[in-house]
Length: 358
Image (cartoon, rainbow, N blue to C red):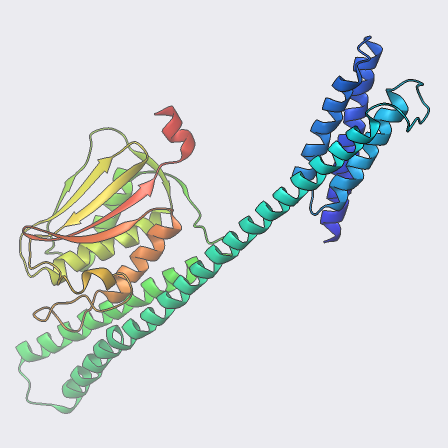
């Protein structure tokens, strides 16, 4: 409040001094037409009303303008003469302009403030909804693998009659569930990192798109050696501002979901397109697709696994993280079904300066 008072006062004084200086320049150049001086002061008055808060500064500026025109620029100069023809009209006109402009700008400022508060409330409500959905997803996606690990380890510990093949299978299940839990924890830490950022923005840097995609695929193949991915992207050199670690996480989540939940052994298509204002990434599988009833809620932390897929591994948390990351980058992510499976597409906007130079 104190800062606003000093700013408004300083701006008002600056505009009135500037208007007076410009008017004196006209006066010294021989242009002694009071109408021109009045126009200069009226402009200063409007700018003051636009840039300051409330009515006080505009009205004070109007009073100064009227008295300044009378004292400095009407004969006899440097003397007040309140009985000049038209003086009351000038005074009332400037006062009306000031009040109307101040009232209009104050109403607009209040409207903008209300819109900003409403948008902030909607963002906060969206965050709370995401947190609630994540908690529901966590209760399934983390509890079920833990139960499986405990059961398998107990069976290994208490059963002496298991064959080597059975032991190998149980150990493999434990390793797979442990890896899945680690992946989920990494995803949850990613969301925490973004939500704890004071500016709600990720730290972006110019990155080569091909290198980010290659790194994501290499990381995923360490976990899923049997996965097959076909990459289709432009031959042109693509540079995009992003957080490479987070975008790699999105690609890994989408590609892994396509591999685990599609129910198909066909290769997964990763299609990258260079558009005027953004770059799009599409992950397309050739499997069973997504239930139409799940599509509207699939990014809200709810389970996306179909009845025939591995019930231990829902898509809820991973897709919620994808949405959070892409929105933090200023992009969008969508899910749909095509003729032979499901397709997830997200966009990353280009920097304005890069778009202008393209």
